[in-house]
Image 1 (tube, rainbow, N blue to C red):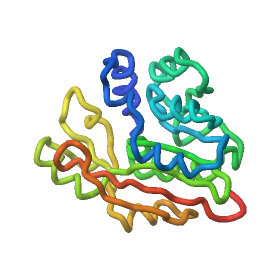
Image 2 (image 1 turned 135 degrees about the horizontal axis):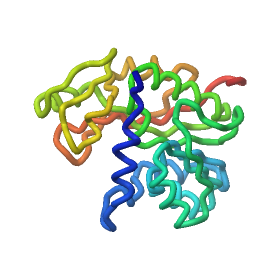
Image 3 (image 1 turned 60 degrees about the vertical axis):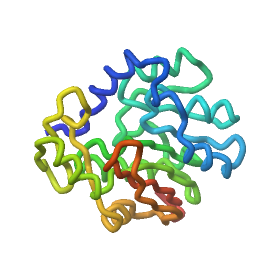
Image 4 (image 1 turned 90 degrees about the vertical axis):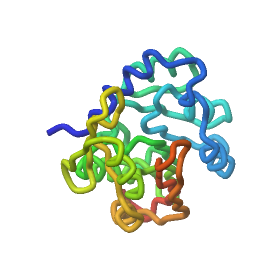
Length: 218
């Protein structure tokens, strides 16, 4: 069963995105993270959407590659210009080992089951240079009861849920985890920051994490 299917939802979203969409504004966490990076560093924006982070990072002088599985988002980035775009799946990155100084993936890699997630994390680890950082988000297990209160859901695999929520990406698999589970998933990384944060909607708990790639080899 294919579980990393949420790009179908987001491709439709990107094709009709409103000019005032929140998905066009960079996150404060990304701006703060970037302020501490070496100027000109090579960054992979994994799951770049319409490029709110990739385009901003490029404007700050970073060497950015925007990757997504949704072509409509990449088309928007191409129209803006200045950023290399790559159409690919997150668990099969078409890059050489240690190709990037840093990797960013905002609200992306939890779209799938644990198998997809582990393969994606292994790919992030492979393409990231030792000592490089990963900035990302994951869904907190604290969020799951809020989703269950709103929608009928079923667990399709350990920690992976789908919900009867037409018109949203929740009809596609989402992975929820605790802090201990999250850290176990990211073997080969040292945790620099981990915070369980509620986003704009009540109950919308996300892990915000910054990790450092350890070791001398992928």
